[in-house]
Length: 241
Image 1 (cartoon, rainbow, N blue to C red):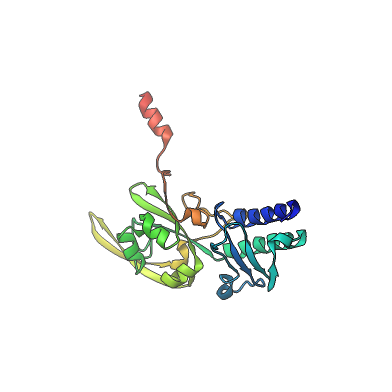
Image 2 (cartoon, rainbow, N blue to C red):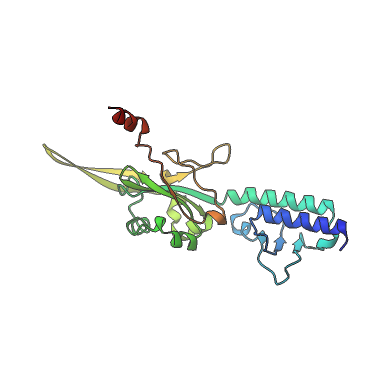
């Protein structure tokens, strides 16, 4: 491999390393099929994994064998363009939802599997979240536990498909006062727990928490320590007194 070929080989490695979050020691096998926005075929567009060879990247590019040592600038541009389009499509297949453990029905769907997930604190379990490839931001809101969850659409469809539906559910609130107890039934929608990217592609929860991007590096639980009900100024005033 001459110097020019070596430079292109290095450039190609960096494209995949940066875009697909590969470590420097990873080698890559990629199959690129024609673009499709179909949810059923999207996850088959790009497949990659470690190879036995440590000094080469092997690709199948649009049904054409791509020899890394002979790759030209047009091939690199096509790869960049394809990966960028793929990443944009992949973002559409991420589901963001926000839960809080304070009041069933209002703050989380008090139905299975959510009831069990909340009662067993699954979304604060790093091992469980990594195993399920969830990127969770977890912390406290006053005395409650709060979760901003980034998940693949595939995971949601398999484990809690009602989130993606227009289904509703009922829950009851019992209010006690000096005049006795009052029972009220309320209706909530699963869709009310979903959150969506803004024009910049960022996703925020109702308390201003920013969802973690859905990447391998973020799988697990990030403990977040910002309580919107906590006011530093009030404490400062107390100290001055």
